[in-house]
Image (cartoon, rainbow, N blue to C red; front, side, top):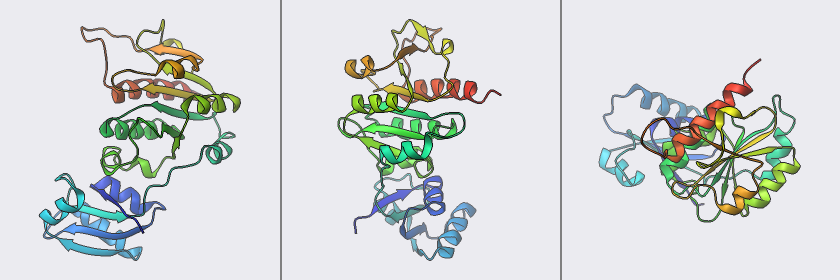
Length: 246
């Protein structure tokens, strides 16, 4: 069976806590981090073999030096199915809340956006299959394990997906720097899909046409653009603020 590699304290912890099948946990020999010791205990309780390795061996397994002394071999990441997701969440209290990402290519940005989405109460993240980053160890590390706590749905056609979300009763709001309305002038309550575009080009024109409303983040300084993950985090938490009001 093909295996994926996870590394870092938080991604490994969330994977061990979740339902993803894990095969082996590798921990740094002579490490003194009590968090790693707790991970080793958790793995042993679940019947997962724990192997001691030198730091250089862990770096080779992880493919980089940012493993924090722990590497986990797991089953490949499984994307959620759109229709299954909708059937499970359409009747949720407070309405459906989805983040749609159009062409995010930087794995650090994708991981950060998924982490922000999970923290903001988003129920699922939708990404396109082509011309965009998918789930990788770097994404999982950047998400701090959030990919194990929130469904990620990969689709072949983002425009058709937006239309399906509309059929399910969702409003679709897109983030666009040139929009006439800013993010603080919108109502985010109810069934909602927030669309955030790529780092350089933003939301593609055809996807933009299928958004019910375009919103801009107001700027007060000399820089006219924000990193995609920062921009997404700002609008996600404005939406969360409104949706959590009594």
